[in-house]
Length: 334
Image 1 (cartoon, rainbow, N blue to C red):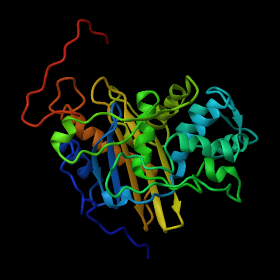
Image 2: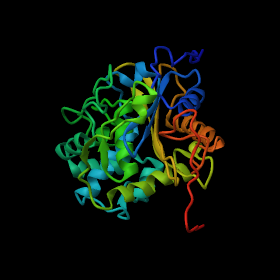
Image 3: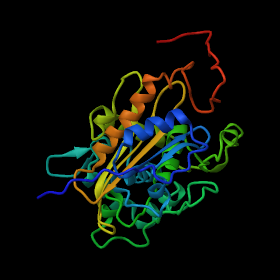
Image 4: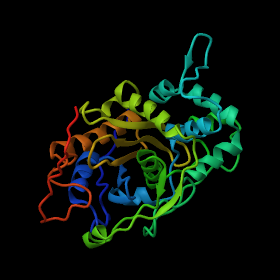
């Protein structure tokens, strides 16, 4: 008889004094009683707005599954292994370009890129993008993930399509997604201890990503495709507030977990967020599409509260009890 996942309270032990209360409430509701973690970051400054399930989020990491394809894609574009519209044959009758391969999360495509890149170049870009090091600046209890020490015996496809050999934390993926969302600045993530700390937070730059000039824009098209027609369709909620993201589904045999990842950000005029959902369970049924649905519920909840509006009820940096300022523009475009 198939076992069912037992409900848990992922918030036990969380320290929430510096959280954005609106984002925190939406994240807790979206995650529900699943075993996992949600990290939400402001990509413009690296502030962690909430971290639900901190026990999992702060430990030494999990296999990244197909989210590693973001690293593979940026490395391949920067090293001129492939261009965005280059078709790579992956079967007798099938070819993919980068956009469709990201949207559909095609393993053979990214295995081919990995074979062309080689082990050293892949691990170089992984480290540059923040894997294998702490993402946060003095975040208590945070442990770094790991970068593969050697090429898997089964070939580069295991590394560059499935993430074998890597251990990634939700914070590391949130840092990487923040750099993609903001155009290439990798910030130290900062988790305020109080609302006063949040108001006075000063952004700290770790480094600029040294990637192809159009590389980030190129992978954004595939990430948008993942939500529009690919593996992350469950994240979509409003065509006027598009989501870009990458799913990940695999089994972490090291600890016996079925993994579901979704790293994402929204493309809106105000209050852009990075949302990382990681689900980890010994029971089947956990996967990337489910993680994308959890993220979609979070975005939908906040949108319903006008969080992403210029004069919405709340937003990053809003001080409880203070009125919102109406932002106007001399020109309007549709």
